[in-house]
Length: 376
Image (tube, rainbow, N blue to C red; front, top):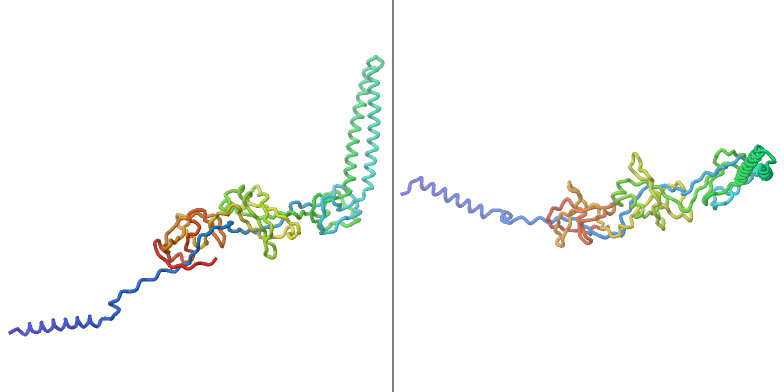
């Protein structure tokens, strides 16, 4: 007969086996089912597109005149007439002021009389010299007489030259009693009225500014110049300028850069640029402020992407590019000019490729993603 100990051990073994079977039978159903696969991340994408022009760069500018003149008088005198309306347009050669010409006409007449006298003296001196030369040959007069005749002839010639110069100066003074517009433009406020006496001190009578064409002055950083155009010479030949008017609209006709200043700012590293624009209707007022829109003609075949698609690391810029199966891969790119709306890509992408522009932090190399198109 089995011992009590063996019977007890057998009973415990059967009891434990029953508990194990019951546990397996009553285990929760989810413990027997694997977890579903994690969904692919959703990202915003954009297509690499060709752009007809580089992104527009904007700069504050000021309208300046090609000719900005202070009208002054070179002589003293009384203003007897003002021939212009303040604030009006005038043509080159139009009379602005007339000064009293009486004193200057008298001075010219006196200079002319002195010239006639000097010419008569010269003629007499030349006749005397010719006679003395003949007499010396015949030994009728001494050499000293001939020397004196030569001296008088040279002195008379000098007097004629001086009298001619006096006539020229007197005529010039008389001419300046009529003050004319040297260029076409808009005349300003007159500082003197008719009846005023003005001195030949360079004091300003009025101002005259040319209005068509006009120039726009703005400053561009050397960094922008080099990154966008490569050099100042290329900037001058390639840039196209339009100007935003006070109402927010742009000029219909684009202008070209006329020239750049010869030095950059000491503290700002910016270069002053001057663009020339037509202004036939006078819509731009000299010294008013505007916004300059700058573009490059030669950027017609450039590719552009959303600036948000560009990522950076210690090796430079790169983007996530998706293949036809939406599988992501890292691609190095070279960049050109940029604005808030577009980033020019000069190398690394081709037109029509798809890049991740939103949710770039969700992507890793080789990961397949779900996409939604970002509207431009």
